[in-house]
Image (tube, rainbow, N blue to C red):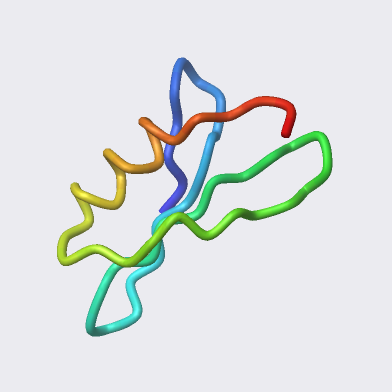
Length: 56
């Protein structure tokens, strides 16, 4: 499921059947950054919203 922050999609959380995988999306490059696996969707969503974005 796509995660939005102020109407901008900032990441996705996928259900794998055993866990939820969180990814941050950089729309400038189309790159997805794996953040981690979580036990619940809500934990994955929180991690996406807290993920520090910017130039690296």
